Amino acid sequence: MSSSLRFGVLALGAMVLAASCTEKESSIGMGLQDPLSLYQGTRCSIPLTACTLLDDSLATSGYGAGVVGTEQDSTFGRLNATIYSQITLSGSTGISFSDDVTVDSAVMTLVIDTFLAPAGSDEPLHFVAKQLAEPIDIEKSYQSTDTLAESSTVLFDSTVTRSTDSVRLRLRPAAHAMLKQTCSNEEFLQRVKGFSLRLVSPQNTLIAINYEATYTRLTLYYHTPETDSLQYQFVINSAAAHFMNYRHDYSGTPLEPIGRKPAEQVSGAQHLYLQPMGGTKVRIDMQPFIDTFCARHPNAVVHYAELTLPVSDPTAAQRPERILAYAGTASNGIYLVTDANVLLNAYTYTGFDGEYHADKHHYRLRLTRHLQGLLRQKRDYGLYLYIDARRSTPFSAVLNGYQHTEPMQLRFVYSE
Image 1 (cartoon, helix red, strand yellow):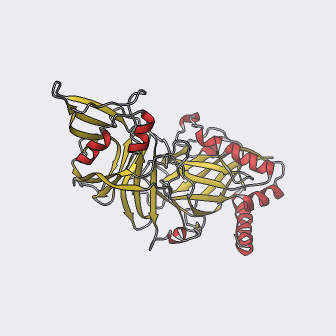
Image 2 (cartoon, rainbow, N blue to C red; image 1 turned 180 degrees about the vertical axis):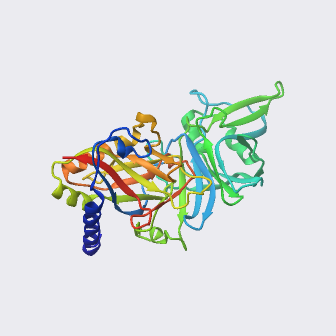
Image 3 (cartoon, rainbow, N blue to C red; image 1 turned 120 degrees about the horizontal axis):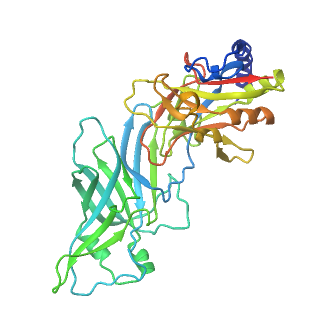
């Protein structure tokens, strides 16, 4: 942040602090419309400077859901989501097929956890699966930007119709030869390696595959001259290594600076942008407020604090279930703010743990302990906002910035 901008924010914080921290609350539990009214002390509402940044370090290895598909949005640009997965054996003693085995079919069943498509869309789903040219390293933590080399062997390239909760891909004959092995588990992984999976069409469709489901699997159907209707279950669910690649293109959108090399931040004066799947995060800078507040109130005790995050479009049909807050550290790490995991049910209140509060059109995060800690240490290393379950949820959020007519605010009650 430039010195002039920082001075401007500091001056703004001082003026707002003087104007907003003047009301005393002397009655506890008198009304349930505002949680600040439940505490005695001085009540404050302070806008905090913030910006949108690229979420460029998202680990996607081994999670319970993986997303494939595409999304095109005038605000968040274009997203392409690809899954990379191992194929492993269901036993520990290897696999053996006799020479007289005839493969009838190989079917990949994918259980659907979430299906996001334009309203009324019932187009067939066009999937493409290819064999990998390099194995997945089970010791590596893959990031959302990682990819693997693919071979020229196409395992599936066709359309299917989605059932209520799954899709079934009948693989090409090339998969039959790939799977019909006689070898140990280790040899199988080196020979087969795994596959990549993409959803080519329809556009603006994202599918979250449930890797925890037993029926997410690959089945080889075969027979011998003596026995019909045999099958072998290969493992492609959570017991097999997998990760997701998320590729973003922000060209022509308000987030275009984030897509540059190196990535630039986007001002949060009017709007803040939260996008899952390796998209964007928000950084809030509390240091100007802390400097001003601690200078005036060195012995303040915080009784209650929350961060309110008004949404830009209250009429949006879909939005993330929850927003989480992570605090920065001096060593450039982050940790989950404890208050973000505490459900406040006292006096029948709910929705203070980052969930959307529909009647107020905003998200609310409880930050009491965090704010008290910042005032005690007099140092802030940034507060980072992320969409919960951001590795697999498809929903983004646009929030009001700190200079908006209905801004993001830190609201708290304190006494001295």
